Image (tube, rainbow, N blue to C red; front, top):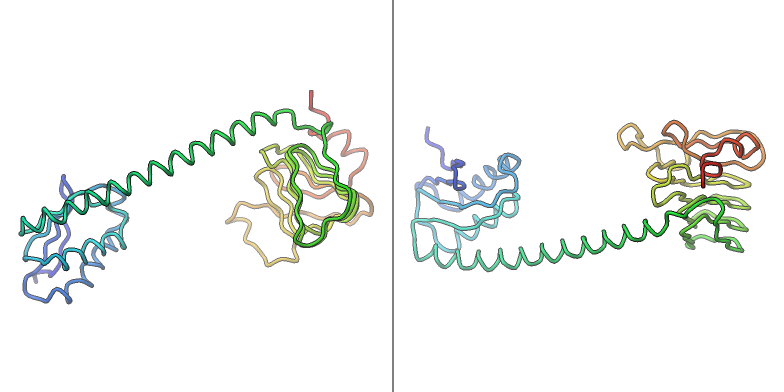
Length: 266
């Protein structure tokens, strides 16, 4: 039995063959289904679309182009139908649309390139981040407040639930940490987070993330995130990356003697 809609990939693009029997309104859902199912196969190529089998109006051809734009990532460079005058009109519009799209894409690439260069310069300027260079903030941070430091950061107060702190180096909370803390935000995996009373909602160190068990459960095997392991000892505690996981442990002599962030800086 002859199909009403067939799609065939050729060297120059795609041939869409339509049965002239059914109405166009009957064919359109079938066209949509064909392109949707073949979207992953076609990829993101720039193609010429050739329509065979029936003489389409400008409106009908436009609907087909809209379907391709919605269901696939193809870029149509030109259309060939059985109406040459229609082809010229459509292709002029396609040419203008592609020119605008390419210009916007080039602009976005330029913006991202500029941002990337600024980030590289920023990171390059922060090569001196270490435990001997710290910024001090006096006072507690309440819900909704945040504080960022390029070097290490010492908070003389609490970081309450709903507040956040981050630093290029390590974070020292001389108080209670129940909010969010990020250390080594420029990629230093030896950085750590220390608090006199450690009960954080979330801790990030470099690219690793630990989330409190009080939050909704997360499937860490799928996300690549590591959950923290709590100690029950009293006194100051520190969160650091150990064997690829963020671990919370006592902030004691053993930690200070073995901490790479504190001891391996020149």
